[in-house]
Structures are given as structure tokens and as C-alpha cells.
Image (tube, rainbow, N blue to C red; front, side, top):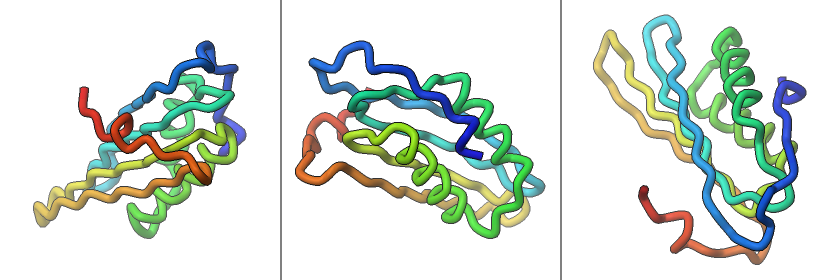
Length: 121
């Protein structure tokens, strides 16, 4: 599926900035709120391709939301090679009411700007 993801050159390589994309996917008895947050290096993700990618994720079968989060992270890392990246999945089982937040992240070696990635906007 990662072939759906398209990247374009980072328009401002002189600055470090956070890109955050959100979408909700509805599965049989659960809704998953998916957030991709990253600090670009040389490439940025075409937003529409991430939307198309998540649409394809929705038609796949996932054993766990953790597996989905890991797959999204790996695919986006392969395409972008970002300085830092995090995938968050918030899921709620509509039958039981159980809520879960899953966070998975990675960063380039020796890159560290926790102040930048911890800001909330």
C-alpha cells in the first residue's frame, strides 16, 4: 500500500516545523482517529495521498490497532525519512465503550527537539 503515498520536496529546508494530519476511519464496531505528526527533512507528504492511503487501510483487515499504527509508521518512514515521526491512533469500541490511545514514534539518530514536537497548537 505504501506505493499510494507520494512525497514532494520540502519547500523550506531552512526551518524545522511540524506537520500534522488527522483522519477518522470507521471499522465494523470501532472508530479510529488517526494522527500523523512529523518533522520533515528533505520531503513532505502529499496530503491527498495520505488520505487515499488511509482509505485503503480502512478496507484491509487489522488484528490490532497497534498493528495498523506500526504499518502506517513504517510506510511513512520509508517514503519520507523524516527527522521525527509519530502515529497516534485513538480508538473506541462502540459496543463496550473501551477507549485506547496508541502512540508509536521514531526519529533520525542524533535528532532531538522535544520542545518543537511537544508543542500543542
